[in-house]
Image (tube, one colour):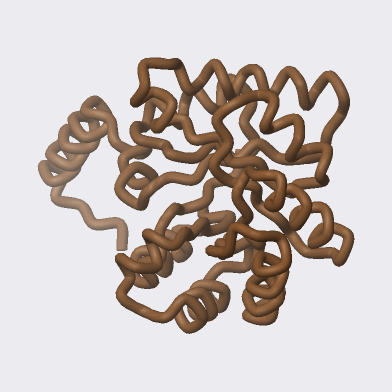
Length: 217
């Protein structure tokens, strides 16, 4: 499974990338707003840090304007992945952008039928929003499972990018089902390493080592 971080905070991205576990970054207009910077400059800096795909989202809703914005975003760096909404115009843009050789992340997916359409349009990634589906009383992981089955049935190459990850349990469940990628906030990625028994065991080992009076280096 690939790990993407869902943020436009350059400091957080740099720190996570230095761990060697980061495969890409996803951003959106809300995250750019939170960063306080210009979309071009912030995204350019992110692309210089991370080797993998960096999703940058168009804000237009009509095909022609989407394509104009996509052209601007694509010039930022070679690892830009154009993010488009799951609408008819977005799917049309996806098809055109993929034909031109660009990576495309189709976002705001909330149904298996939508995911099927995105795969037909040649999307590089489909982003089903788990947490937001959970918010309306439906199991978001069921959607991941449905998409996995459909994609496997027809050997679609579109990668399932589980988004709107809220908990470490979401990460585990997505991995068990077979999502190709998860994108999560920095705090959630860091929380994956945490377990009380790990902390307790390390504390005991260090206490015993101190008693030996030895030093390795």
